Length: 348
Image (cartoon, rainbow, N blue to C red):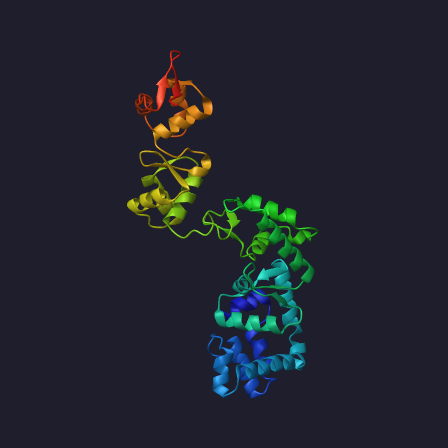
């Protein structure tokens, strides 16, 4: 894995860090190795655990850590590592100038130990600033404070323009994002950088179909069969039988979907409307809820007196049933009355 990181960075992170640490007293070196996972184990050790090892407080360990970092910045080895810091700065700039910590480290190497060494150089190097993780934003690194501020502001504006139900195709989402960004360098106006910037936000997310929306929305944060069913039916664009929905879930998401379970979830989820025997549509498509009789009543309420054929035509847009089923419902004189002009009206 060392060769991979060296290819991506143009330098050897472990060799640079090893040379830096030799400038420190033994305890300071061990504290940094433990805190950053720079030793034989890539696991990072807590302040408490190190404090217990040396019988000192966690605050004292923090002081040792901070003093050791400050000492390294004054050492000859730090000046000699300038080429490595310049190369890291170039990489961050090439990835968009501001990038999630996870994306940055994964881009450079998948090796956890090597990632720890690169992270240590980021913490130590003067050009690198980081944005703390909070409820809205992932932890990220940047080298241009003005650009980082523009990106964060654009992400907040982008989120505020989304409703809970919105699902935006990626191309349209990127176009919206660009409109929120002002006077950014042309080198950053490419989809790869913009997608990377979108991933900085915890408020905006992408579902398994590549559509963007509010990260907490059921349409984006898919948790179970009903959410995958919603995406499958929405992608299909017209009503589906529950057996077909189960099949689409398996094909589209490579996820096992039992037919009975799928049917039960469709029944319980208010996003779906039963429009025929086992056929389900999305409520957002404007389908009327209820049995055929209820649909006929709603049609007459909206349109006034209609002939049998006119009613059948309109009801079939709402329900996948046979015309005869509609005719049988029209014969219910408790709800419908046929006039001399052969038009039906509602019984008051």
